[in-house]
Amino acid sequence: MHTTESWLSELPDHAVRWLLDPELFELIIRDGGDTWYRIRPAFKELDVSPSPQSYEALRSSIPAESTVYLGSDLDPQDALRAAAVLPQSSLYGEVDTSVLHVLFDLRIEELGNRDPDLIVTSAHLAPSAFVATSRRPIWWNDSVAAYAPDGLIPRTVEPPPKHFSVQLSDVHEVDGHIGFTATFIDRASERWTGQDRVVMSVDASPWRLPGESRADRRARPSARWFIGRLQPVRETDVHEYFYLYRFDPRTATLTIWDGSAYAPIERVDREFGQGDWVLAVRLLNRNREVALIPVVQFSLTASGEWTYDAYEGSLDAMITS
Image 1 (cartoon, rainbow, N blue to C red):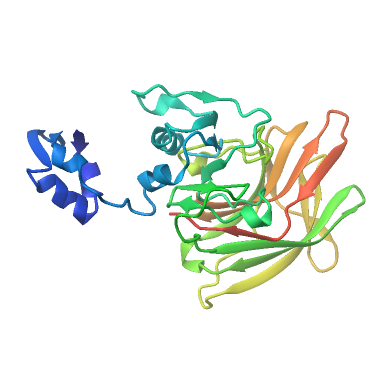
Image 2: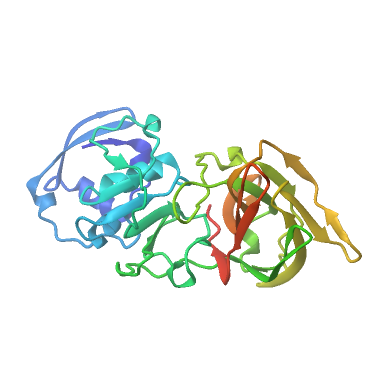
């Protein structure tokens, strides 16, 4: 086993004790920040339950021959980690293998019309697109969350905290716009510093998950960017507020009621046209995206015709580090 100094520094105490036990690991060579160990048979015979939020716990909880969709919003390294621990499953989606030198045979197919048993996405993405009964992951850590849309795979850990929620109400069409009221509930003001809204392309899955992945969340591309109105309120544990909006799917224009009329929100335009899109609320911490909450999914044709789906119920996000 080859380890690095940075990896060793992140190990829990019990794992460090294992490495220091010569009955379990034989030290072969240490060269600067790199160390090589020979794994002894006694280590393989240890009967230890995995940590509930470890990838090993995810692996052991998924039945053999399950079908798994790796969402395109995943960080590429997180997608590879999930793929590596699920060799007993059929994997679908797209994974960028250029970020690592992959030593195993990674077989990932296009999802097509399949209905997978498990969906793996970024933990910072609110599962708005799933039905309300499937929005609590069966497994998660600070980077990745796994959902069972049909409810057949049992939950292995308690659900993540609901740091921030969005609830849409009074959704209706008016003058070629989508009108709605958005109520925001902030329960973790210390975890974010600012907010904006974005219009993003989505993937080809039935859930229309955000279709762009970036390891550096500051670089996420979007077709429209709207300046945010929300700021964290430090003086209260829970803060609730709401705004009235109108959104034009033909131009991806967002306006807000200012007390007398609907006024345009300051924005930055990028390439936009026909296709499938989502309007999402984004929370930031010093310009880094820490939560993304899709609120409206819409499709636009070349002729300007559009359809939409406003996500119902409570849209809850865990604010990630």
